[in-house]
Image (cartoon, rainbow, N blue to C red; front, side, top):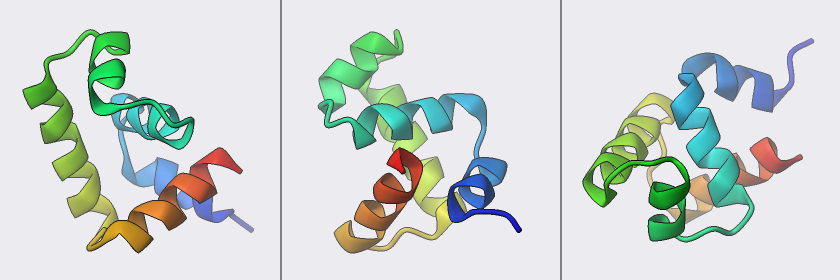
Length: 71
């Protein structure tokens, strides 16, 4: 049986997964953009894509995703 984090990871590309892992560790938007060698605008685009792919609608949804990835 697949775990929720496995299902999430199947829907995202490697960069999106990497971004979520940094978020789950508490890094800020600018810190993540620096670590991933991207602009803030690119970071925002990745977050938008993640929200769409995982149907994230609010902060509670984000919290569940971050918790599942961090577990």
